[in-house]
Image 1 (cartoon, one colour):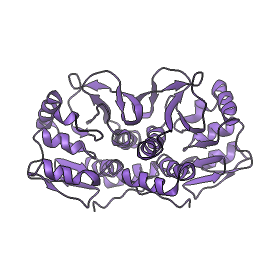
Image 2: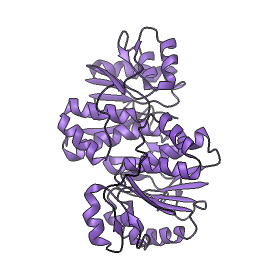
Image 3: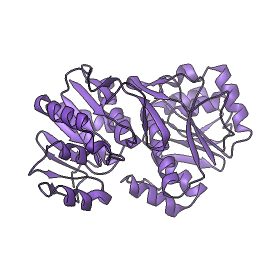
Amino acid sequence: MNIGIYIYEQAEVLDFSGPFEVFSTAKRLAAQDWNVFLIAEKHAPVTARGGYQVLPHYSIDDHPPIDVIVVVGGVHTTEMHNTKVLNWIAATDKTAQYVVSVCTGVFILANAGLLKGLPVTTHGEDIPDLIGQFPELTVIDDKRWVNTDKYTTSGGISAGIDMSLFLVSQLQSLDLAKTVARQMEYQWQQSVS
Amino acid sequence: MNIGIYIYEQAEVLDFSGPFEVFSTAKRLAAQDWNVFLIAEKHAPVTARGGYQVLPHYSIDDHPPIDVIVVVGGVHTTEMHNTKVLNWIAATDKTAQYVVSVCTGVFILANAGLLKGLPVTTHGEDIPDLIGQFPELTVIDDKRWVNTDKYTTSGGISAGIDMSLFLVSQLQSLDLAKTVARQMEYQWQQSVS
């Protein structure tokens, strides 16, 4: 099970570090065959918001096959118009089992042509923009995350942790998701509402 | 206000990325004169748990004066015997306004000779070890964080987010701490119990 978290310049730190913590803790505790990694457009260090520099494990040109792709939020306004990345996301979508976003990552998925007609969510502050820019989406404003089989989108920043725990419950078991939350001493907002 | 987060090999990802997110969001929203940075023993990339690689902004030999030092947890058992780092922490303690730990970072502070006679906490799983190794501490096992003026220690992993929000309330205002939690869509466990 290869879980790739896509990051870019000015991504929000907790949007990717929260899911990484959840999935890598699940791997440590039980899911030993999981491979959890960060992907960026290029191999160079990525400067996330606040000047936090992280090294991607792979670029979009050389990563292993992806089963779960997580596209994070942050300052998404440039990234959502990066044609090379949008094409890569659309191609990855064709073979991935799960395609998910955290926070404003949903703008990138939507601009890659995904999610049409589906219920989705994002950071509370960005709900009006999402509705305005993508009238073909059904935007939900009162859930921590919204799931429709293959696609899951979460609310802002820390909601990505709750959504990642949900994905652990889907990929492995509810018991493991609860164990991971306990290990992280995180109060999982388990209900989707 | 210089806020330095000390990281090391096999540090827990959320232990440092959570506080970084809190403090850098506070800076973005209001505390513009804050400088939030990661410090490691050396300049090289640090490999945190799960293979997550992050670049420190400074080494312990070349950082700006530190007002708030955050020492994080993770696989602390090697780091707590790193004499150079312990000496650096003891020296930093003499001039810092606040000295805090997340999760098992408390073992490093304690081994640097700090916290004697004070109430402290750590990850629930590590409470027995902390009591066994440092009988001079008063170990509390039912709080998200424990504060005694200069020193604050938090429980495991995500409790570092709650503690960092508390520090924002001390350094700036309760209003700003609540605003940061809202921006992060984080349900702050504001009570210390």
